[in-house]
Length: 108
Image (cartoon, rainbow, N blue to C red; front, top):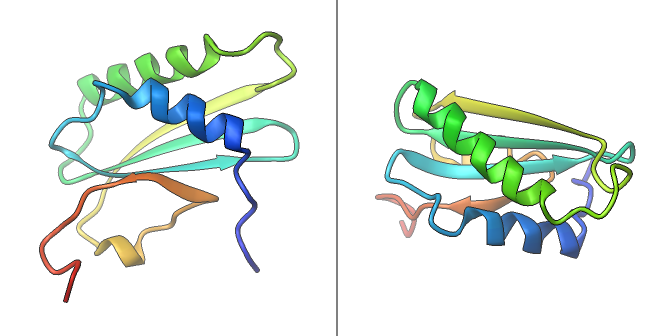
């Protein structure tokens, strides 16, 4: 089963919202967007999540929602912050990664 395609407009909104919001603990950011227009944003971190991580992701969500002209464009947003030591190719990309940090061994 292949991942659902993330709409181009949403990718642009997410990328713009991430400007200045990426910090060293973030390994990757995955998103999912359902047919019901529900958005999931998942941070994969190199350490256990902290309150600051959830505050950061809320800033990103606020910035994304600032692009909407009506509640029908994005009906619900779920934020997730997960610690994982798994290699990037073992992480669940949901519908796709919008950010991934190059890590040791990526080019091996």
